Structure formats: C-alpha cells, structure tokens
Amino acid sequence: MQTKDYNVDKPRKFTRFLWWCAGADPYFMNMSPMQDRVKYAGIGGIVLCTGFLAAVSGGYAFSTIFGPKGDANDASLTSSIELLVATIAFAIVWGLIIFNLDRFIISSTGKGDGTDAITGKEFVQALPRIIIALILGFAISSPLEIKILESEINSELSSFQKKYTQDLNKETDSLFKQKRLGLETEKAEYENKKLQYEKELASFDQQIDDLVKVQQAEMQDKRAYGFGPVAKKMQADIDNKRAEKAKFIELKRSEVEAVQKQLNFDNDQLNKLSDDLRKSYIENEKKSHGYDGLLKRIQISHEIGGIVPWVILLVFLCIEMGPIFFKMMMTKGVYDFLVENYNKRKEVENGIFREDFIYESKNGAIHMEKWRYLDVESAKYEKVNKVNSTDKINKEIIEHWENKKRKQISEDPNKFFTEGNESMETNNA
Image (tube, rainbow, N blue to C red; front, side):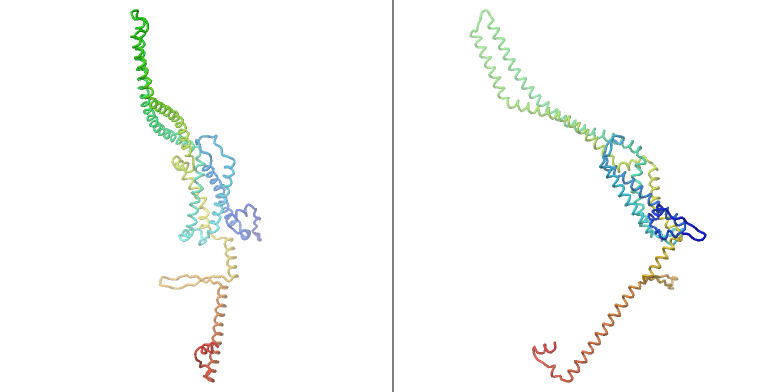
C-alpha cells in the first residue's frame, strides 16, 4: 500500500504464508497498514509453531509407543528403518492435523465487539474453541514434557524396572520352590521304595553268602572232607534260597520298573524345572521392560518433576489458546473494516442485507434485527402471483362452464333426464 505520506514495502512470501496460517485475506492485507500486517503475521507464526511442536510431540509419542522396549538406560536400543519412516510420516500427518485445527479455530474466531476488553458474551461464544485448544494443549505438551525430562525419567524408570524384575523373580522363586519341594518329596518316597527293595535283595544275598560259607567250612573239615551228605544238604538250602530270591525278583519286577520309571520322570522334571526357572527370569525381565511406554513415563514425570511439568503444560496452553484471546482483545483495524465493508457490499449486491428495529418495552428499548433475502422474496412474490393468477383463471373457466350448462338446461331440460346407464353416459358427456 502506497499513499502520498505512507509507504509500505511489498510483503515477502514468508509473510504472506504467515497471513495464510492466520486465515487472513492477502488481498486486503496488502491494502492494510503495517500494524495489521504485524498482528496477523504474529498470529500466523504462533499457529505455524504450534503445528511444528505438534509434529515433534506426535513423532516422539509414536516412537515411544512402538519403539523397542528394554532397560530405560540402555543406549544400545535402536529403532529400525521401518519404524523411523513410520514415525516421520505420523509426525507430519499429526502436525498437519493440529495445524489445520488451529488455523480453523483462529480464522473462525471473530473480533467480538471490536474492543480490547473481553466481555462475558465474547468469552461464552469462544468457549467451544477454548475447550478444543485446551485439549490440544494437553495432547501436545505431554510427549514434549517427557522428552524434556528424559534423562531423569530414564534413571527413575530403570530403577523401577529393576525393582519390578526382582519382585517378579521372588514370586517366581516361591512358586518354583513349591513345585521343587513337591517333586523332591515324591522322589524321596519312590527312592525309599527302591531302597527297601534293594535291602531285601541284599538280605537274600547275605543269607546265600552265609550258607555258602558254612558249606565251604563243612567241606574243608577233615572229618567230613569232600561233598558229603551234609554238604549236599547245605547245597539244597543254597539252591532253595536262590530260588526264593529269583521268585522275589520276579514278583517285584513290575513294581520295581514302575518305581524306576517314576524316579526317571521326577529327575527329568527337576532338570526341566531349572530350565523353566531360567526362562521365567527372562520373561520377567521382558515384562519389566514393558513398562517403557508413554503412560508410565508421564506418570514418572509428574512424580519426580515437581512443578516443572505443570510449567511446561501452562506454556503450551498459552501457545495454544493465546491466539484466541489475542483476537478477542484485538481492536478493529483497517483490515477488519476493509473485509467487513467488502462482505457487506457483496451481501447487498446479492440482495442480502440487515434491517435494524428499535422497540420500546416496559424494560426499556429492545434492539431487533431482520435479515432480508431479496432473491428469496422475489421468487416468493412471483410464485404467489402465479398461483393467484392461476386460481382466478380457473375460477373464470368454471363460472363460464356453469353458465353454459345452466343455459342449456333452461332451453331443453328433457335432454338432461335419462335413466339407468344412459344417465351416467349423459352426465359424463
């Protein structure tokens, strides 16, 4: 805009882009003074920065949720290329969503009464937009909050993960001790049965050995040298005892095999129990590393951050809701009057305008307004006249027909007297 005593440079492309971010019309901004240009460029800059911060916040939240889980202090945890691409894509989409919402909220927020005071009516009208901005502020600030306090959160989270792993391992040890105690008790019972069987076998062997020793001593006696009747009698006793042993072994064979089979099973279970214990330790560690998500980090940030998380939240709420309040506090400038004048002129050109009425009541003067739509009124008037004209024409036609019929009846009434089906045909005629 250039006048005799006021020159404004042509706006740069970035300035025009900021106007677009604020929902301002560049045509009227080019005709506006620097004061209006700066105001809307500033609002557009806030909207643009909000969208950028939303992209960073959304990307960090996405990588935290879907990234690799492990010890919070483990620097070796790295994301895959696929996750990195997905994170960048989500960050861009999320940033554009928030940017578009903010741009819509700002562009749809009017000037209210055009003064720098925020009245109750203005605040109530802007309340839905304020609520939306409040929700967006919470959504944007939380991921950035945990990113700002990342080192402190990682330290606290790592301690929590280790303690949680220890608690899980204690529960696992208690459970496995119960299982091991049961298996060892059962194993001891079957070992006692096997030991009893071996003692009985040893008893048979001892008895046989004693008989053999007596027989050998008898055979070496000089008075009964050789395999005499006494030795033969002793041999019979030895054979009988061996037969008893063989019979006992055969009798206990199935029982001994079952005992041995159960002992082998118990030994396998005890060995397997040790392997299962190691696997449970690994699973416990995975469970504890699962507490590396967004929710747990937000919880820790509020536990250890003190007032810092709330300060961060308030800063983002100011960034998010600031433009709404700024627009309510902005006084009308040249740009606003240019836009208002153009809109009113277009309304009048299209047959749309407002009429104001003042009525006196017992409570004082009442202001009422009425919007008139001339095209609608013209179409309505045309339609009403057309219908009224049609009604008049139809009425004249019916009257003419009635007069004609009356005349015919008066001239020849017998023509209209018929009976039966002829009456119907005549009347139809």
